[in-house]
Structure formats: C-alpha cells, structure tokens
Length: 181
Length: 181
Image (cartoon, rainbow over all chains, first blue to last red; front, side, top):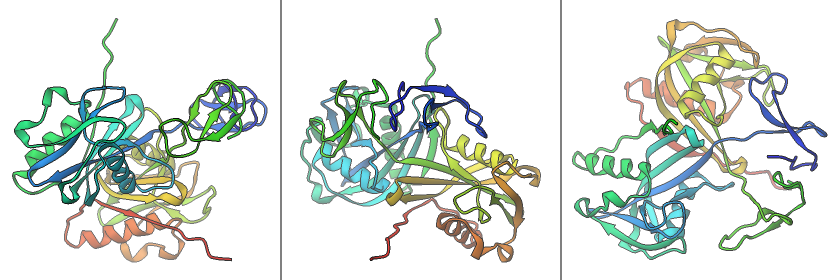
C-alpha cells in the first residue's frame, strides 16, 4: 500500500494514537487503512457415501483437487458464501449445511470455514474455475493430488467421523514454517 | 474508495473479466481492489458461575456492557485474537478456549466468532477501551444495557446450555432491516 484510497496522497507506516501496531496512515487526511484477515468459505458436499471434489483450473495449485471454496464476499453469510462457491466451482446445489471445520492460517492471514452439506439430487457440473468435478468414495480420494492441507484435513476428519456418525465442529491452526537459509 | 492504493491513480467500478460483480479497478495499473468481510473475535470468560463483561468506553454503544471482542488482526489465529482482545479490554488472561458462537452480520459484512473460556484465577482489570469490568451471575446480567445483539444471544445461549453442561457450536445470522420510509 503506497497511496491513500480516500484522497490519493501518500501513506506512511505509523502507530496511531491509542493503537499498539503500525498501520498505513495517510499523510494528508490521516485516514487509517486497516488490513484484516480474509475469510474463505467452502463446502464438503456429500452424496450417499461419496464426496464432491473439483480439479482446479486456476492457480494456485492448478490441476489439483479441492473442496469447493473461495473468498467470502461482502453482504453474504458464511453459509451463503460456501453455497455460492459450490455453485460457481461445481455447478452444484447444496442444503442441510452444518459448520464442520475452522482453520486458522495466520502466516497468510486467512480463516477457512468448511460446511458439511448434502449435494441436492447428487447432481453437479463443472464451473469455469474447474477442469472437472467428481464424486469420490474414501478409497477413491486422490490423496496425493489434493490442492491444500485444509482440504486433506477436512476429508480425513469427515471419513473418520462418519464411522460414528458424529461430526463435532473443530478449530485448528495450520502454521507454515519457511525453511531457513 | 477513490484512488488506487498501489499506484495512486483513480479507480472505477467495473466487473473484471471472469467475475460477476463490480470491483474497484485502477484505471492506470488495472489492479483489482477486493473488499471482504471482517472478522470480529471475542471471549465469554467464565469464573465459577459468573461471566466477565466490560462496559464500553468508546463508541459505538459507549456505556453499554459487552463481552470482550474486537477486530481480528493479520498474523494471528482467531483464538489468539479473542484472547488478545480480552487482555486489551479487561486485562484478563484466559485459557481452555472452545469455539461457541458464530454470527453472520451480512448487512455490515462482519463475522463474529465467540470462544468460551476460563478466566485464569478469576482475575481481571480495566483496559483503556473500557469504563469498568465485572463478573456477573445470570440474575445480575444487565440485560437491558448490553451493547450488541450478538452479546445478548451468546449470553442467553450460555446460561441455557450451562443447565445441561453441553455447549454445542452454533452458527446463526442476524439480519437488520432498515425501517421503511
């Protein structure tokens, strides 16, 4: 961030009065530009004993499989956002949504929320950001070709919880450590 | 948003290629400025049969009582953010944190996450954004002087769930409708 989005003047890094960390502050109009974590919402759509995955047509991780998910938009709920992403990426409608997994990724300031849900009529297609979509049984999941750690962890948890038909909500953090040197 | 924070040129509202909604796009460098919902993280700190509340020293809702909560910062987890806010607003340390309530407020593009937690040693103080802090039993809660609907709902749920000692996670949306005319 170099310029104030309100007045166009330069911004500088400064600790505002009463604050305890540096913010981008406009040198002309004193506007404080806060930068906050972003929310990514997604679904784990289930049809009978199978889960819907999409193969990504875009970077990052093009060609790898993911649960439908994406950035939450202003003006929607987390549940609406997760359903919207599932429609956009897999042309699939879902219902019976229940929050299932929350992941904190502090190194990239993201929070993931995954909802378990029912794939309506077992129907799906391929959205513009996907190369293909498909339903997978546990032993068919392409474990070595999953796009993201959060997807792998969510799928592992769901197939484990399915054994007891008990799906408690869980929050966990994923910390990436950059290799030294 | 009037100017590009990257290059300082003007921005215009336009639907970028492959997108389906208007974004602020720079007329000079084509940078797309996404605006996303913000996360507010908070705690419900418990000591014996009492809950810690703070009376707000700042707007909005100055003078009203709230659970300690505030905007999540970059680089922290939701749990760390909730604990940080509790320290900042009530000089209180907490542990045994469990996600308890998620609220979607789509009209203001906010997502609240409240954690149940234990108030360590029952000790607390008053942070710079609070007028006072205090522990309340259920019949002592200032129900008519609570700052926010999310605080009221979280407290109501907790005192209800306490009867069974079972505190399931719940997600709900709060929609505000502006009065007509």
